[in-house]
Image 1 (spheres, rainbow, N blue to C red):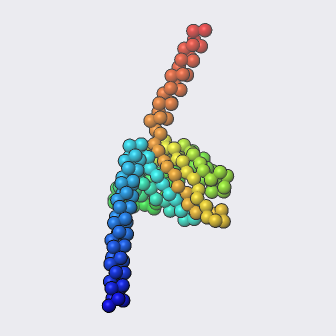
Image 2: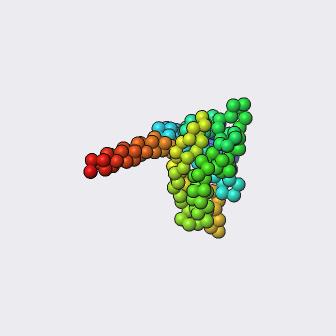
Image 3: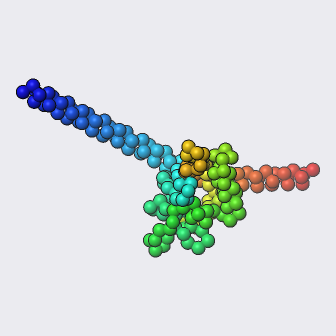
Length: 193
């Protein structure tokens, strides 16, 4: 009977321990969902995306809601069409890779983007910031600013890249207007002299 009581106590302790562990896991999962929701709201408000790329395969994953400005389809993937990437009209999805993204980058900006990524992967700092134009889901050009960094394995080889992208089109428009006004003012000043 003593060993039966001991087994019974052990089983009871195990059941209590399992219930406690399950409650802790539910609490952790709830906190994670809350944190993800706060991040989603912040990204949406800032019109930002987060991204992560496998440095070996080039596969991309995106999170955020700036679909219209950055040309993502409703599934969060890019769709290939002609010279740039646009929302597919037939419901098909395109590849979601660095190469697909580069096809959306304006041809004059593509070398700058490629050089920044190449330098980061080569170990020259491991981080980059680059402003460039991309073809949006509606076909218009948008200015974006991408911030990225490289994660490396124990041997120093690139494993993944991750970062944020945000739309700076309005900021660029305001800067261009300001520059035009400054040029106009300088021309008028020159006429008065």
